[in-house]
Length: 249
Image (cartoon, rainbow, N blue to C red; front, side):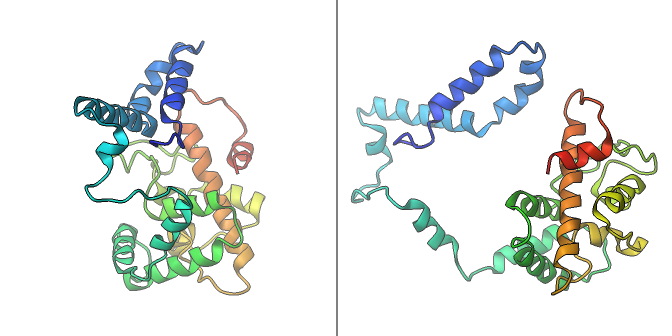
């Protein structure tokens, strides 16, 4: 950031000006909390604090941040260096964290098998779908949707089936979504006891010959997630459900 690679100041000021100058009167009200937690704002104010502290000590920000006795390191190929650090075989803590996140789901797959199935599925799926679909599946597995149940509130199914609440557990068995995935993706309806595990891609097992079917199921989950985001935003425009679900993917 000190070398301007992220252009934090310019981007934050441009974002703030864009919201302030919008013709949509409610934009500032609707986006107030989002703008307050935006990562650009946090970086902007953090860097401002560093500049003020450095100025009081009559130092440059780089001098302030440099550790005592630390030699100047050329800031080149930092992505490659980070990749080397991230590619580690010490994955025990990662697997423990993933197991804790998967424990919230009441599925037939035993807790000891969920992590390995997730890793096998993720490693195979990334070869057949785009990164954003893979990221949506990971977010779904970790219960990362902004649903009423996750926010500890009550709310009906946003897809209009009137048979459940706003939650991933319900959307796994929602009749509207099930019919839509059959019509658009030719996905068979799973038995009731396997519907949640199927929505999470924990069932069926990832193996040769099932790649296309699992990839289509992942596409359906991603489309549902995108449509859900569209529905929870203020004043969504009425459109056909099937078109809205898959137009975002």
